[in-house]
Structures are given as C-alpha cells and as structure tokens.
Amino acid sequence: MFKYWVIPFAALLLGSSAVRAAAGDSAIHQPKYVLVIHGGAGTILKSQMTPAKEAAYKAGLTKALEAGYAVIQRGGQSLDAVEAAVRVMEDNPLFNAGKGAVFTNEGRNEMDAAIMNGKNLAAGAVASVTTIRNPITAARAVMEKSQHVMMIGSGAEKFAKQAGCEIVDPEYFYTEDRWKSLQKVRAADSTKMQLDHDSAVKKTTLLGIENKDAKFGTVGAVALDKQGNLAAATSTGGMTNKKFGRVGDSPLIGAGTYANNATCAISCTGWGEYFIRLVVAKTVSDLMAYKNLSVQDAAAELIMKQVPQLGGDGGLIALDKDGNMAMPFNTAGMYRGMVTSDGKIEVFIYKGDN
Ligand code: ASP
Image 1 (spheres, rainbow, N blue to C red):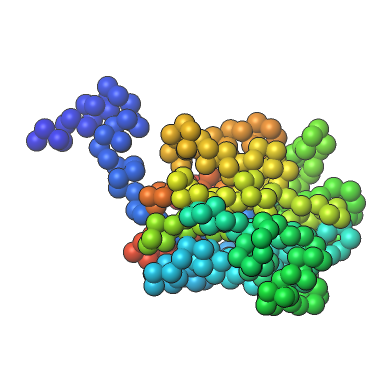
Image 2: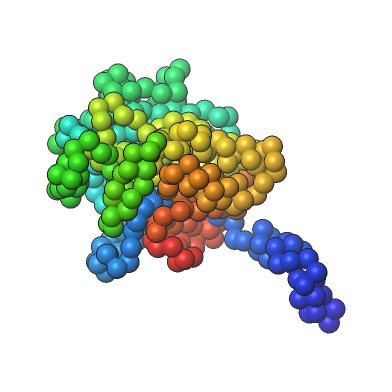
C-alpha cells in the first residue's frame, strides 16, 4: 500500500525528475538501445512532405537499422554495425551522403566521412572525396590500414583504391533533385551555401551573415555491441553550394563524430561551422566524463543551448555505455531511428514524434 502513495507524495516534495529517478522510471526502465541512426536534421515539415516521400524515408531508415542490427544480433562489432547502417544510407539517394550527396558551388559532389572505435579511440576519416562509392568504408580503411587518422582529396582516393574500396565515376553521385537545389541556391545568391533537407525559408546567420533557407543533411550511426563497445560513424555531402575545399564537422573527430567506451558514441548533423567551433561531440563526452552529466543532459546542453546561442542549428544522436540514448535537435525535424537489444525498431521524422 505504502508504495502507491509515497511516489505522488514524494513528487510534491522533491519535484518530478527526482521522483522519476527514485521511482526508477527514467534510467532504469529505459529500454537498452543498441543502434541509433540519423539521416539529417532541418526544417522538415509534415505540411511539405508527401505520404509517399515520408514512407520512402522511413523505409530507408528501417533498412539501415536492420543492416546494423543484424551485425549486433549475431555478436558482431559495433564498428561493423555503424559502417553497415551508414553504407545503406550512402547508397540511398534520399540522403545527403554517397549517392544523393549535395553539389558544391562548382557543381561537384565532394564527400566527407568519419568513423571511431570507442574501445581504443582509434579513428579514421576522409574529406573532399569525389570517387569513393562508400566514403565511410574509406574512413574505416584509413583507421585500420594506415597510420593516419584523416586523409583528404585525391590522396584519400588513391589510398582508398589501394585499400580495395569501390571506386566510381563522379557521375554516379548525380541526382536531379540535388542538382536542382544547387540551381535554386545559385539563382537566389551564388555565394551562399545551404544545408540539405529544409523546405521552408528560414533566416539564420553565420558570423553576422544572413543565410536564408538553411538546410541540413548528413547520415550517422552510433552502436553498442554485446561486448560493451561503442562506435560512431558519420557521412555527408556537406552543404549545397559550399566553396572549393570546404570541410564541415562530420569528418572531424570530436566535432561531428566521437566515440569513447567510458562515455558515449556521437554523430552530429547541422550547420558544420558551429559544430566545429563548439567541438560538439567531444564536449558532450567531456560533460559526461568530468561533470557526471547523463547522456541526455550533456547532449541537450550542446544542442538546445550552446549551438543555438551561437546562432547555429542541427541535432545529434548519442548512445552511452549502458544503452541509454539521446537524440536532441533544435530544428523542426530530424530523420532518426533506433533499435533496442530485443530488436524493436522505431523511426521518426518530426518534432514531438517520440
Ligand atoms: N554537418 C554537415 C556539414 O556541415 C551538414 C549536415 O549535417 O547536413 O557538412
């Protein structure tokens, strides 16, 4: 009998979050997640989405989750799971990574990717690559088959070919939708860059410069395997109309991608310049390590406070060593999904969906 009244009574005394912890309904009853993915954050509005397109995005996310979960389920490494999930999204033209990557100002597809192993802090990244079908696999090759962490441009491509990655003609990455987006941005203002996925006109500023119609893309995955190892992976085409040589946060370890078994695995999406300046992914990990914050509180501190305070926007996915996850975003939507250790898959698009 006692337990039925003590919790509401304690709620009055202690406030709801303390009671939730006392009642054990947040951390303790949260299902254990093993894989979380995103397909980009931005002004993704239901009013501007057709049912067919919405279904296609959800199917794409589900397929990526299934690919990663199969690895975890059979006792495989989190590293293999994040690579598998990201490869599926790189091959899907709906997402701004691999096939379907956005165009640069010069009309090229220049892609960035990174992967990190939380077990030993090994990491690999490629940037500004134009001929590697799956940049995430090239990032993994840099991590495992070279002494380096990051390789860029033609050098990265040469290395990826030697490492056995599939090389394609740059034409492979062309999609009409992304080409049209570039023409639209160029017609409005040939100098401004634009992030993928937004559909509504939105005013944001970067270092005092107004940027209308900001859009976000990028794909990412974080996973926790049965051995307790975390891994993170991120892959992107970057921003529409980006200047030659521009690299965003995604391939930068600590900015857009990070994993450490002691804290969490993280993949970000959003306006890269802000995520770089705030070293978002490593800062979330540091808040957990040095200030003892939960993964949810640490992720919210960056995405709901620090990034918007500086004028940026976007979101991230994070998974901690106990299978607790966070997926905050300060935009209208973020393509996202997760799977629990017992195989339950959920995918979401808009704010307030989950
Ligand atoms: N963060 C990526 C970049 O700045 C873009 C994105 O997430 O859409 O390159």
